Length: 166
Image (cartoon, rainbow, N blue to C red; front, side, top):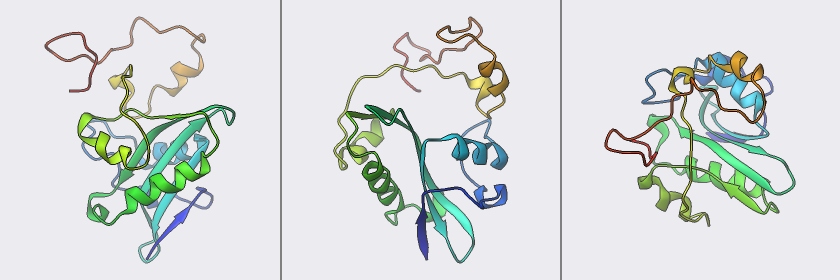
């Protein structure tokens, strides 16, 4: 049975195994738990029989006008069961009343999010892949606000400068 939770209270890293599929430098389950604890809103899908998280979605929000959804993932063995859709519905309900809720996704996923009232838009991003596993937190905390370090690696297509994900 899948249940949904809005807190990571009582959660251990061992319950977060298997996420970040396809990432070459995956965050550890300990880093994943930190990510969840530091998010403003989370919804977790939990397989109660196994005691494991099988899906999650997060949001960062000012709770006044805006929110950003950086992560939605469902473990491969649980995909196709409507869990991702339920996570999105539940999170959007918690963000109801905000002026804007934004996310970035790859082109093939746009139709999925449009089912929930999100619209295709143009965006911009920086991907600092050397910190993909979450190891750059100390350097971010010590940096000056509003500046982008010259050492940040901007993700660009090999053909050009359009900044889209490959």
